[in-house]
Amino acid sequence: MFLHVGNNRNIRIRDIVGIFDMDNTTVSAVTRKYLGKKQRAMQVESAGLEIPKSFVLYCEYGVDKVCFSALSVATLQGRIESGATDKEQL
Image 1 (cartoon, rainbow, N blue to C red):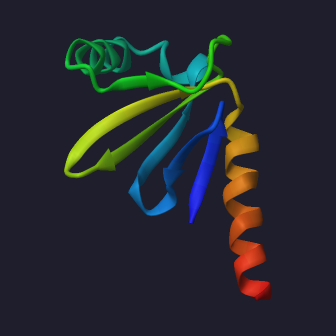
Image 2 (cartoon, rainbow, N blue to C red; image 1 turned 120 degrees about the vertical axis):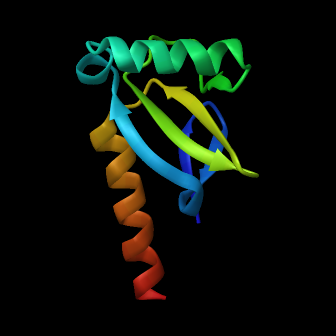
Image 3 (cartoon, rainbow, N blue to C red; image 1 turned 180 degrees about the horizontal axis):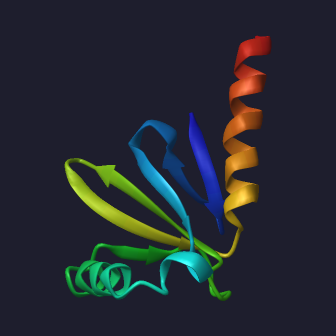
């Protein structure tokens, strides 16, 4: 299954390490340093032009990557949960 994070960007659910809220996590200097490191390594992408509300940390082909999303953590979590529910009904 895939998670649609916005702007036609999909991430395989089994590759997701975590989904994080921008307002809460970027307060930490450690998180800002990590995101800066990923950006310099060209391992950051954006799922739209809007101001991001969350970011998804995922591992693709053995490389940790970050995808910024304009969708909230609650919305992304709801999409994952509704997808699991739909699958169970099949």
